[in-house]
Amino acid sequence: MARPRQGRREQQGGTVQTANNSQKLSAVEKIGYSLGDLSANLIFQTLVTFLAFFYTDVYRIPAATASSIIFWVGLLGAFGFTPLMGLLADRTRTRWGKFRPWILWTAVPFGVFALLAFSTPDLGPHGKVIYALITYTLLVGIYVANNLPYGALSGVLTGNMAQRNSMSSYRFVAVMIAQFVIQVLLLPLVLILGGGDRAVGFSNTMAVFAAIGTVFFLICFFTTKERVVPEAEQKSTIRQDIADLASNRPWQLMLVLTVLVFITLALKGGMYVYYFKHYMDETALAAFLQNIGFNNLIDGINSMLTGMGLTEFQWPKDAPTSALSLFNGSGIICGIIGIGLSKRLADRFGKRDVFGAALLVSTLCLLAFLLFPPTAAGTVVVTGMLHGFFYGITTPILWSMVADVADFSEWKYNRRATAIVFSAIMVGLKFGLAIGGALVTKILAIYGYDPDLTTQPAGVVHGIQMAVSVYASIPFLACVGLLFFYEINKQAEVRIEADLAARRAAA
Image (cartoon, rainbow, N blue to C red; front, side, top):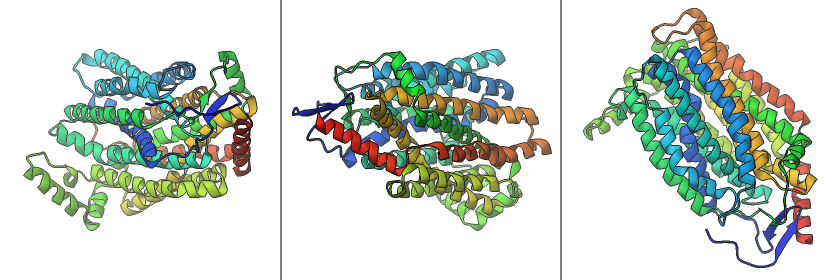
């Protein structure tokens, strides 16, 4: 990528920017950047939504063992890989910048490790556990090496907060597209690409995702440019970076909030497949799908696929899978609508207040699942749509708030360490995913889930219902409470942006 054009440069607070740079991002750059998240989320969303199911029902690893793998590797990613990657990325110096080269370097290994993690070699009971442990560790490690610099890149593409809000909206539309692919189309793709064999289907599907992801990561690398660049003279020790974080209260709150958010996302995301398979009434689901014309739509798609010599979708014969796909798909579409409103609301009312209000309403939608009987198929889908809409509003705001915390750190300490801020938040993300993902299989194990039973005991069914409602709501409610102590409101956003711009202009 070409270097910025030469000219008078502005320096202050440990950063430099070209004086004639408006910090406005083109649509091409926003789309290119967002493709990086689409690529990563083809794998990430699969881990969140289907890893527990893949281990227990496809690779046949006991639920308690799968829980331990997900939890302990998640902890290693959170407290081992992530801090080291943050320190390394902030100290990377290349002609491409600090963060962009990591997207290039990890593009191919990311796809390879994803393919290995969702392969099912027959190694015996103990061999399977060892294989799952090694391949999941490799995947978590490469995910951190790719996604942490990618997230930090959002903080240095522009210093303009309105542009940052806009970029976040682009980015999370891409995330929702990836969610749609995984949560709606993954299981049908597994059936098609595996000829009905789920093990072969997962492997073939990951191969397709790996190829697509590699191309999109390369597009992300070549279409973006780092504009907020630390001056050559700025040097900080690891001790200084950690001390800055330790006294940065907004960062502390965002760290805890991120942990809590991703506990809920991993817990409810991983449990929905069990909710539709074992809690919802299959006859009621089938009748609902027939009444809304969904089965007729799938029949038409199947006729087209079989005419092309492919295996048909098995949706009309499998109401729970079909209903889960409809539930996820409609929620994601509503989430994209929420993302579309996010920037406008955040620009007007401030990120903190919009995030808190939308998260509260989305939490109430989760709690409502406690009240629905197994036959309430339509009500469940509509409530999922409402939850998706309001949570969609929060999605881009969360990461835009993290970038604001990096600005706050520079504003307060006159040193910019973007990657260490993002890496610390990524620790929270990984920790939250480890807890939430492990809770899926742990709750199933506690309540006595047996994957070989077609009909689960009443206690297991009740545990699944509690997991997607009450248990999933508790972390979200705690987040709403934490936001009352988060000091970067609308007025603070404006002040920080103006002060940093004035410092650079004065230099």
